[in-house]
Amino acid sequence: MTNDETVLECAELVRHFPVKGSDKVVQAVNDVSLTFGAGETVALVGESGSGKTTVGRMILGLLAPTSGRIVYQGTALDEMDRRQRRDFRAGVQAVFQDPYDSLDPRRPVLASVREPLRRLELEESARDGTRRAMAALEAVGLAGITPKTRPHDLSGSACQRVGIARALVTRPRFIVLDEPTSALSPIARAEVMRSLHDVQQSTGVSYLFITHDLAVVESLAHRVAVMYLGRVVEAAAAGDVFGRRLHPYTEALLGSVLFPDPDRLDGFGVLRGEIPSPIDLPPGCAFASRCAIAGDDCRTAVPPLIDDAVAGHHVACIRQLSRSRDRQLASTLRKETP
Amino acid sequence: MTTVAPTSTPTRRRNPQLLIGLTAVAVILLVALLAPLLATHDPVRVSGAVLQPPSGEHWLGTDRSGLDIFSRVVYAPRVDLLLAGVGTLLAALLGVPLGALAGYAPGIVGEAISRTLDVVQAFPFFILAMCLLGIVGGSLPNIIAVLAIVNAPIYARLMHSQTRTLRGRMFIDAARVSGCRPRQVILGHIVPNSLSPILAQMSVTLGMSIILVAGVSFVGAGVEPPTAEWGVMIGDGSGGMFTGQWWPVVFPGIALALTVVAFALVSNGITVANQQRSRRA
Image (cartoon, rainbow over all chains, first blue to last red; front, side, top):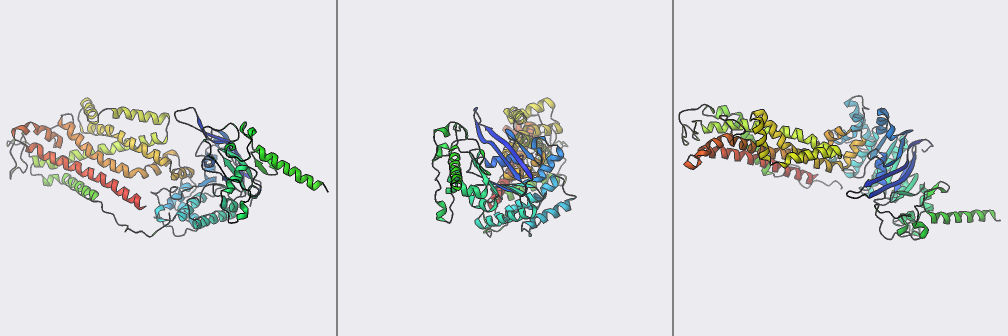
């Protein structure tokens, strides 16, 4: 489904939050750039506090970046006129983490699903809006919704599918999925993931899939970006991140996942120590304090995200980089030497 | 977070406070409505029979102007409830948008609103009302306006904190992603989700406003005699308390107290009902 057309792009996004009563700032997001092709799923993974949700909120226009640009279909978010702004709102939707909390408890779910059509003036009449909302609900397998059904009448999985129906009702090109399955039971999670997959197959929508659930990343994502303390430390095609895992943090993160195959755990590092405070970030690599292979040179300057450290694989680690280059060089030499 | 068959029946849980309170309020409203039928005398027509104790002719006696106390007691809620009701409604209509705005748009606007409210609330409730009425005079529209002004900060504060809390909820983010402008988020999502505490507060304010009206009338800054109003009656009769003429004071006092208690019960009942509902959900 993927092609080369870029739907949305964010460049050098930075978001700092001032700390009350001091001059310090929380560096939630630092220099994050991501590109989303049509029909593509990019997973943004990382621990709590890595800034991944903040990136999602900036892309949705819910939070203004401190600096950096978000470009939707060629126009920057802060340079949009009224009409473009409306197209952006209709074209960029979201599914949130808590299925109950993301629906207004006072409203029938049908009204919540219809709301984007109503607010963005995309419906011809109230009847048209209701009909399309019903159609969106049916598309995610919820046919039994009546105009009186309220969120607390539904299960968590059904609520989350209502959320997906709301995100789909405007026929968006891009959906931010902010941990859409973390509050669900395993079966409900599978249901929701299947709905999301089917929707992408039939509509060609792009996803930003924010999660810390690495097991579901592998099944849905085309590309993966790993965040640590506000920075992308590794980004590549999903298979490459899982297979090659150039950054020691990625390796440690994967080590925290319980795979059913004991052999897969071989070689994964274990994460030690505390995640540093995003208020007082260490001068060098933010991961150095917990890294098994860090040296003194890691603690002097922030390692830049090197594009194509290996073809199509970006990584921000000076150590692994030299190691992988050595390996690459070695394999090249092996091939060349008869 | 899975759906479980409800263990409790979905019928209303026991909430005697709400039941008793609403019944009492209904009775008081009915009395006010039917006052012309219930009254045995004209509430503002003087007769020669002054300071008569309760009797078959004057059920609750007469005051020092010869006005029938029973008739005045049943007519009084017409004035008291009207003033308190309209005043409370205006206070909520004034305070709720201010509070929502201050909570939703922090920064200069929010600070300006909050500090202005601080100034209004810095004065004791009753003193402020009395001073304002002393300046503008105690006509009915003025009393309503003063009630609205002294009570509005309560609603603004309530709405301010409600807005701050709700703003962090995901359905507010979802509403924004759905294309709601700030005004639509506030009116469409924040206010509807704040109705229970607002209603509970309105019931409190109604009771307090009745006391306030009676209080300012008692000291002569509010409703003017000979209008049938509990505070006026208590004020007018207070001189006789020590010489044995207790009835001009005690009966309107009882009516006033019962009314205030009724509204307090309704307020508590709303809060309880809200807790029961959120526990069930």
